[in-house]
Image (cartoon, rainbow, N blue to C red):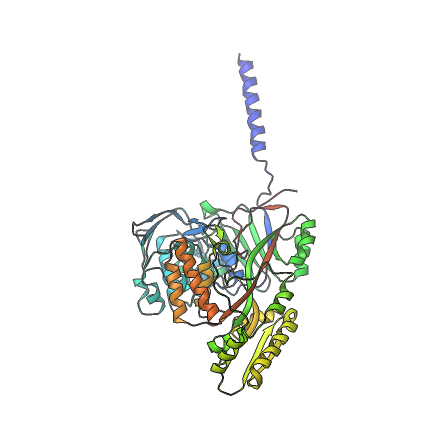
Length: 545
């Protein structure tokens, strides 16, 4: 009997060993390290002031807000473990996970000395969210998306310096509950809480950086799936798995972002598997698909005529309308036709979603302006005082001939009172000129990272919007849109905001195009936003060969 029992024990021991061995088997690489390109080096990784797609891509993986967006674009709890909403929809209470921590490492020795590991309280607390939101709305911060937070009680007045930040409707109820009181109900509120502008910020750390917050690895404290390990200027950014975020630990160990927009390098490194994922152009798709890469399309771009409303001449609504109504866009459309995926029926790109469906499927007609010689002459005569109107139109080489013919028609219609010329630029220089406001009129594109139509339209309320629109009327329309909570109200608000932009000749939409991103065949669970510009790598895995 004893021998029999010994044999049973031996058998069970062997079976346990075998099971353990098989349980350790996986079709993915343990602690994988991946590499991705960024088109440009971020200027900052401070979430409250991050503006470029590159900055936001890194921030999305290094920081975690109260909410995050799932793959359908729906806001779900992140740093919050639960959410409670008052019956009037104006008061939200967010219970935080109590075991999440900010990640501190040897990079921070320069700030805190040899005792850097114990220098500050690293728990992610309610006060971190209070400080982050107050800071986002402080006039001194100049957060580009501060207006996205205007649904919070007193936010607009705090942002304009009319009230102190302590009057903002955000408070810590104990250490792990954040209470936010709204000025009005908003269907955008929970989505906004997933955006960089609403990320938490540890006040004692922020103050220790001495105004350098976000400018280097030693000046960033992360609470996301990854932390910023190294930032080699003009070269790379390296992220590592953040073990201090138990609910959102990354499955891969590290991410290296290499700064490049060289398409030949991107094609080569995607083809040989060096890059895990990368933005690509349409002409690269056949080669990448032949290598087994998966290519994703994002209909996130609208092309049109952008007018600089701050320019001495272009600030005139009558002049802008005269030029639009004197323009036959058929030649531009014919040049764009191979790459366009539809004439624009409004300004909002199809990538912007509402209730999990492209806004384009909901969108009613917004009344685009068309060619009208009589109206064009009328508007120009009302604008002109007899002096010469000098105009320079910026475009890329592909559209030069079409723009020159448009200018000829302007001169035929308006006679000697107009002098117009075209300036042809490389795309990068064109974008730089427009973003800096150094232009009058440009044929250009707006590629957006916005998830919702309201978020996209809110960009035109930002003081640095590409058209330099500064309109109290438009800002009021955006405030009303952010107050909208039902689908019909949102559609109505979007329609009114678009009509304002179009009927006032701020931006004349022409057609939509797509951007593309490729993922290599050994990678799974790379999550893109609907716009394609922000990648979440929390659940990314690399398959074994």
